[in-house]
Length: 181
Ligand code: AMP
Image 1 (cartoon, helix red, strand yellow):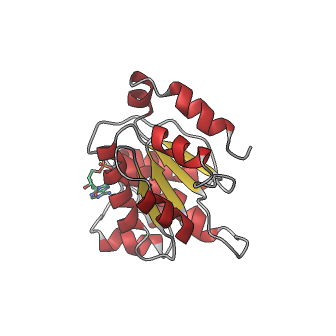
Image 2 (image 1 turned 90 degrees about the vertical axis):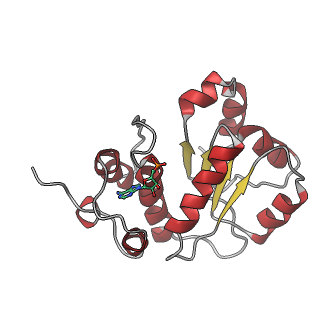
Image 3 (image 1 turned 45 degrees about the vertical axis):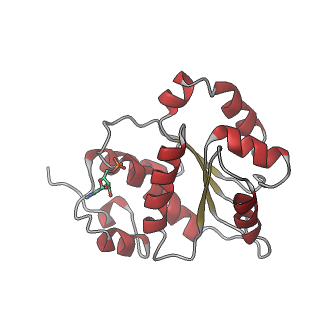
């Protein structure tokens, strides 16, 4: 069986353009398996080893769906929320996201604990479509009214197993309970 390309998985311009720009020639197995399911709006639990392209596996279909969604004009608030267990991973994911959205009008931001909140608050006020966050800092920002999660339609738990191992289950439940149905 021949390996599908990104277009035959349902990825369309402008996301395809970003993929080509990044030099991805063929989808990795986790990408080939997950992209069609996510584009159909399904829930998915994916497991694959580190370095096998999991970030693009969830990012590309999510970004494509965001570009196709009709949004009300006015303040831009996050529609895609990505939770990650550590600052390092959150930063790494947002860096990848910024490459994937480079050919779109979407904006992404990363927030994590251990640093001054003011810069993050300013960036949130400017309006973003994709928010990558560590759970504790997100709760802090949302609790003070700085992060409006009322427009979130898609959630990714990156390295969910590690987040559970690190004791984030309570924080994750708390965040999820504050999201739209
Ligand atoms: P990840 O497992 O998501 O951390 O990705 C590992 C590395 O593989 C990153 O540098 C990605 O940019 C790269 N990558 C992801 N998908 C592909 C692909 N289909 N073709 C080539 N490189 C890729």
